[in-house]
Amino acid sequence: MNRPEHPSFRMLFIGHLLLGVATNVAAQDVPASRAQVKAETKSAAAQGQLTPAGEGAYPKALPASSSSRTRAERKTETRQAARTGELIPAGETGSSKVDRAVLSSKSTKTRQERKAETLAAAKAKQLTPAGEGTEAPLRK
Image (cartoon, rainbow, N blue to C red; front, side):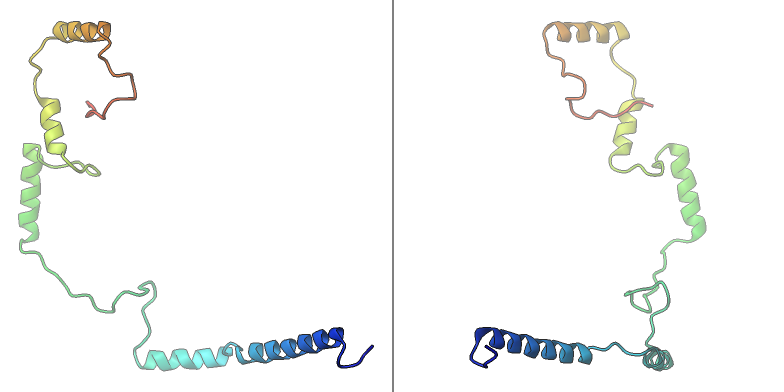
């Protein structure tokens, strides 16, 4: 039964052969020792090839850009915008100037006229249910 022609012998032989190949391949992928890594790092540092801590994949030197206006000019401009109400509050973007203009404008109708219109629209079932309409600007 242990003859080389038997199928179980062939399977055992192939298994041992594959195990030997796998062991040989694994032995070739041995990671570098601590001393080797330290030597490589020292060499890279001496050649200026190390990336500074926290900079990751960014380029070492970024081109410096300068403003066309001085700091005093920018501060004056910001103060002027704050006085005229053009300064956008932090975190707000988009068409806030338009929203502010709409919210701060005086209504052309009285409260009673608006209530009467709303009641008439409710009777005619023309009102949009709460939460289903388009977003409207919030009044502050």
